[in-house]
Image (cartoon, rainbow, N blue to C red; front, side):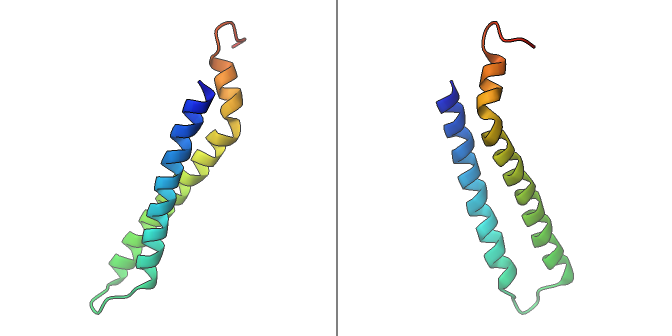
Length: 76
């Protein structure tokens, strides 16, 4: 049902946002032997998580239509 699906996506989005915040903090901290590769790895992780967050936002925005489309008898 819609509430269950919305709850799942909301929970997953919150977990992703927490992960994004972690990597953002790591990006701000530099360690003594940090390399350009380290910076690129962190940027890669952040970029992937941001893409996931945008997709989850899109799903949450359209979840009502998604559920309605899957209902028995819905036009496809």
